[in-house]
Image 1 (cartoon, rainbow, N blue to C red):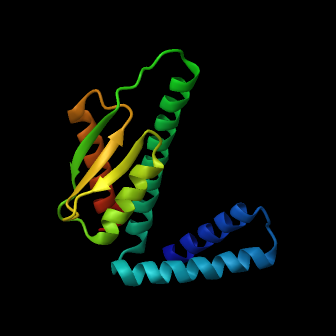
Image 2: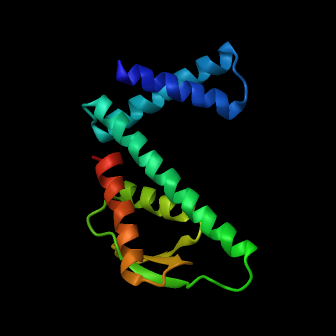
Length: 157
């Protein structure tokens, strides 16, 4: 039942994406989201869809909040005189992540304004991340670890 509701929500989001709320767009969104959910369940071997849907929504809300705060920081930097940022490239350990988890983590970091993965070590165990606001090294690493941990527990568990 929860999978069906998630399927409907994704179909409605598909309609929002296209800006058209006719039957054909809704049906196309429903079929595509059904295929996506089926593929996702096969890849992750998810058994409890209700728990998984809740965790995905929690991660989405967390990530939207991170994006919002980062955008506010960048906007503030643009409209105020002077330079208030403290850029730094940090080494971030990603040992133990699967290739798919590393890919999603890299994309999540790169989507966040003010951060960018500039290199990956040859053994794929370390990311080199450029952060615009990294005056406190420990807090920067803690924020990256929080993102990594949430991805592991809420998206890939």
